[in-house]
Length: 53
Image 1 (tube, rainbow, N blue to C red):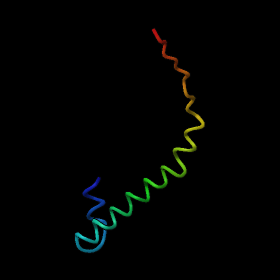
Image 2 (tube, one colour):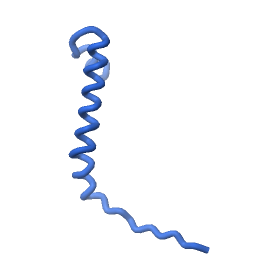
Image 3 (cartoon, rainbow, N blue to C red):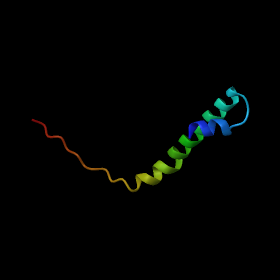
Image 4 (tube, rainbow, N blue to C red):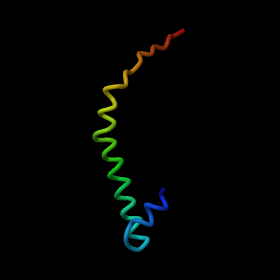
C-alpha cells in the first residue's frame, strides 16, 4: 500500500517526501480536530478509586 502511494505521488523523491509529510500532518490534524472529539462522546470514563492504607 505504501509503495503504491509512493509511486502515485509526482516528482522527485524530496517532493514525494514533502507531500507524504503534509498528508500525514493533515490526517493527524483531522483526527485531533474532528474524530477524537466525536469519539469522546461514546467513551465513558470509569470512576476509579485507590484505597489508602
